[in-house]
Length: 206
Image (cartoon, rainbow, N blue to C red; front, side, top):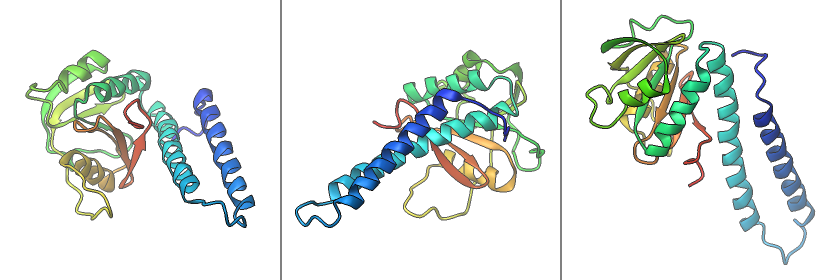
């Protein structure tokens, strides 16, 4: 990750969110001794805010990770948001330092500059390329319809589809960052080091 990344609005949002959660936890401590006050509803609200903060933090760190490996990270982020809004499923691999040839079953060469229009066209439902993974290296879409290794890990409490299992699977074997858009919910996640992180989008809190 680029340690010097600076996305001030998102940092401000995280700061305000953490402060709000801290204040609510402090208030809960203060009323804990009041027998007439039930904490269950408040704790549920705080849990929801934690989940939202996790998504915002994941979005922030995603921007940091991407900015270190592609100058097109804004275009990529915008594309993912559009795919999310339309609930167009997508699987996007951003190559970092590790070579990926030995882990990916190669698909169709593209060799085009990363643009929102090209990325969204690839994942348009009905396009023959939309089921596989797109491979991005630097500012280029290298290929599409790639097949990724599936994780064999059991993710407690989560029922994962093939795209999510593929994202985790590749991230377990390499340092690649893999973005996933769910076609069922429109929600976005990214896998890194075998862990799946939700990202804040318009669909995240629906």
